[in-house]
Image (cartoon, rainbow, N blue to C red; front, side, top):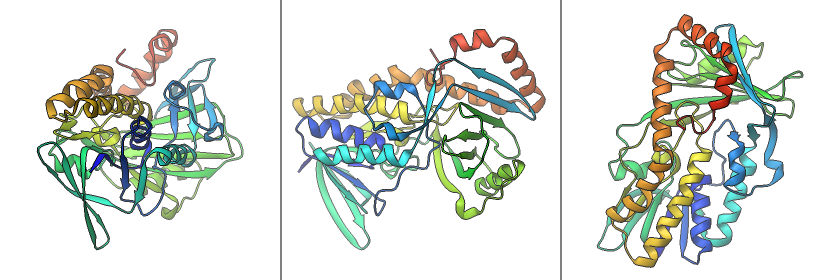
Length: 359
């Protein structure tokens, strides 16, 4: 019998596992990937991460102070004097958290969850690796298995969520402005989302986009061509981004975390900060549940779901409203919107927060 089984060795799952394991509990982390593979992610994370965890300095590739928002060829630039975000090397960040988790937990790759059965005081996880099947008993199961979470499907949650397909590629560029990112709102190339250019501080630029329809890889290749770059399909990495406030993120003996719980900013698709906030809340709820021997849905609703939704739920709802507004505007209306923002930069900069637009 394990105290906790965490499904998914991303930053959210590893952070929670590390904190619970460090508290003295028996934690197993499993991941469907055959070995460590960092998440496909832009790596643009706000400086708020500094208050959430420690990480190696080499994880930071570049520091960003502002952004240009494009509608067609016109754009508005919002920029501050201080650093607002880091461009982070996700392979360094993710591996650092995996190493921390490995100090306090057992970590095994290649195991995919295919079933979960709830008993009176524990759950039974059915895991599959090739032709091998194993069953693991646990008092708590944490589904941190990403945007297309199997754990979420097994408990019937998240049917209200929208999933965006994202694609990105790294291109060498000699001259790039190092501290400003670009966001391009283009209905043809990035319907339902946007495209981006992010200087990585190492002589390369990340080109990426998200879309709710069409071929993300082909559209990214076209986007890169606009800037004179020929990118092959094999150079493109693909991932998925969940959007929306999930209907529920827990059940008896089960919690959902990170992308699996859609703990993601809908207006930008970033999930690192929200996931880490919720990982801390989740670890507190789990340690309390283990102390009290209470693993009911009602307990986790009170001590996990209600807490994280009080913290970021309103922000997700506001982000979805902004996302729907941007999707509803045509190019001319977007240009007018950005013109208004440009004329009121001081006010927008005063209230803008890349994590908490709902504040």
